[in-house]
Length: 462
Ligand SMILES: [Zn+2]
Image (cartoon, rainbow, N blue to C red; front, top):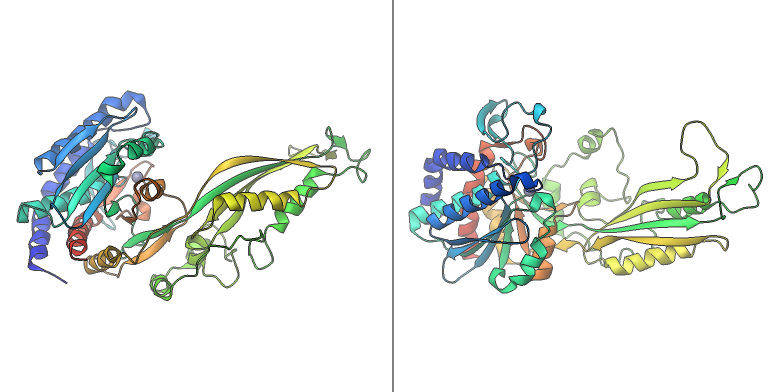
């Protein structure tokens, strides 16, 4: 639904775009590299830049000090109605290797490319360009209407690119001040150049290392082979047993809490036209290796996995050695979905391994951490409202999508602040984030601002 209120805001955004670009370039000139202490004062300067900008817009903004870099927090907007928390980060990755940049990473330039105009600088996409899409959408609303139709809290981090050491303690200490109805996180990408996406499911991760000990020392296979149990043989049997010939994981209880896709989500994913051949072809493969009968998108977004990430045993150097090793080890990880319970699965995995250890061997386990999947409550009306708003702005309809990897902030908002997140971003696969010559398409920036203006409007009515 297009309202007159929104129309005016969109027109304002179009008219103000050159100034919005100037402001983004200002922010990009500040080398806020969070991991390198030499840039600490620059990180602080970027935080102050945002505080000043938000205060100028009429928000009540401040820098909250942490043991590391400051958190930029701001509040404003409507007194009542929907309350949104916006998250982005103003720190950036280091620029090394500098000699691979074609321009100064902290002197942003606007370039014409075969795919349209781009702004090129460190942070242009990740995440300064992205977070400014939201700030600019607010600016346009405020310029036209003097207020926002939603209540708004900003929480912008300066340590995202260096492991977020202060984030969890900060969220825990400021639960009440930060809790909102819903979080908006702008640090993800489009599905493709035409198709926006809201990430609504993020897989969790469970990591385990197993070390199987056999004979007291490495043995000569001529002297002991046949009589002595070989831990590499034990390990190979265990790892082979983890999948059946249909690609399913065989741990008892592994699929407890793994939901089937709803018909609505399945049809959205079918509509994306995902090219599995091209996806696997780009890494020299042809055949999806997951569960039989599942699509490649399901395999990477909505199905759990078990992967062997490393194996060691015996002699792996040049030439040959007839060793019968004293030990063998493997690192195994599981990507988790739905309500799979990491602790229960860790116990199930250890039971599975122990049951396969022969009398002459023993096993040692190392815990490499675990986090459950994040699954957003898309029945909250804001999700469909935001999806419709995005679909109005972009050439192709928006979809709820999954993310195969983890985005910890969404999990923290859920576990610490008790709220779901809408992960919406306008980055493209070729933005070269974290790499030399990072860029953000001006189309992403412009449509991104318009998208947020529409989403703010839609969520306020949802
Ligand atoms: Zn980022």
